[in-house]
Image (cartoon, rainbow, N blue to C red; front, side, top):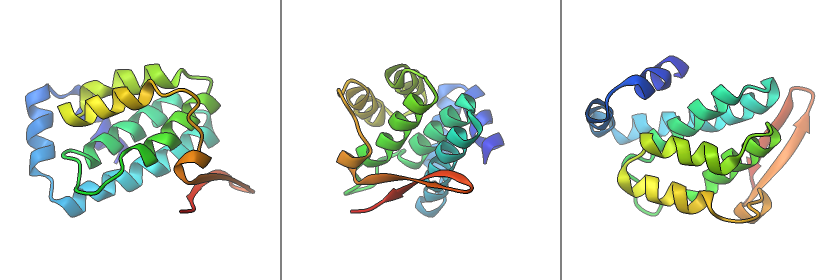
Length: 139
């Protein structure tokens, strides 16, 4: 998945749009799962690029935004992980907006401007284990 998302970032916008438009809904969900896992591994490995690719995978999963999906909930994990890696969450989200649909980019930029985003306010909890941190949704 890392290679697919990395390649996606190099494609022209029209090719990215055709790619996301051709993805069946059940395949889009795999990008969302990968995105969350990549964020977790990025913190464990101190790897900002993996966090960026995970966020872009999340954007692919939300192209288009599925009905009744709260896109802000998973974004809270990326925001939190960016801070853990000493990155500016606003910059990470803002720079990644170029890979989103127009609707998702708008939501991403609005989310990036929120003050004081915490895991707890979006239903997440950081759990520490022998393997490192992980993020569990508890609502």
